[in-house]
Image 1: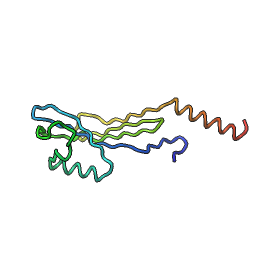
Image 2 (image 1 turned 120 degrees about the vertical axis):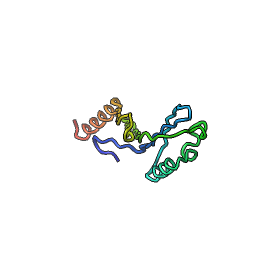
Image 3 (image 1 turned 135 degrees about the vertical axis):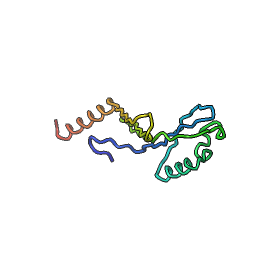
Length: 126
């Protein structure tokens, strides 16, 4: 249950980010959703063993065309009715950057607060 002035995200999603390069130096970004530490551990085992078929089945047109793969970081996304957050943690040495983006639905928040104020006024008789 959420508290006053607190936003609670029920179902955050976490992704490992990879870039897949083929022999022609074309690249494709792939995001693999992870739900727990064990998922991350299993993906990283496959990554270090270069088990591309297990990692990227149904994610790329041809597993045989993969030259190499880089890990680009971890992304987090979460939403509720009034707020959305996206964050990214890049791998060390990555040219990309950390970021966090938060969006609020001000109209919904104002409506909720107005309703709360109205209910409080009714309770105290004003």
